[in-house]
Length: 118
Image 1 (spheres, rainbow, N blue to C red):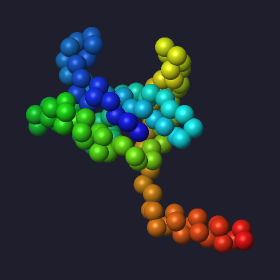
Image 2 (cartoon, rainbow, N blue to C red; image 1 turned 120 degrees about the vertical axis):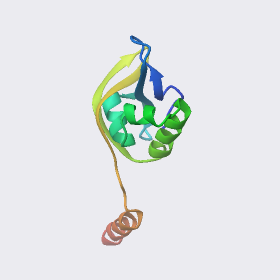
Image 3 (cartoon, one colour; image 1 turned 180 degrees about the vertical axis):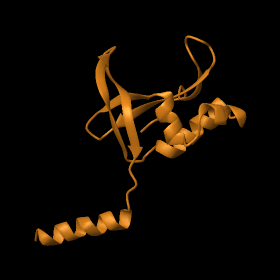
Image 4 (cartoon, rainbow, N blue to C red; image 1 turned 60 degrees about the vertical axis):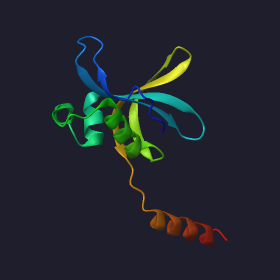
């Protein structure tokens, strides 16, 4: 997953007031698309509301860095609607969760499956 600089604290296009969203490039190895996470989903991923971040004086760069540290190279399950926009795929994310993988357990499971197949 790649998080462009346009993610994080951004001015709302209608009001000009700060808003919070995530725009990410999702790549499953077979293709990529741009996914847009709403304010509510971004707050859930960060574990902080826009108001909390503003009260702490968080900057756009700090929030973007936090999103990058949280999401880049992590398995994430997203559900949403996909449309073609300007010859690219764009997903409006409706739900998302970071998948926590126990690497040792997963490696053991894969090894057992390989051994059973012999």
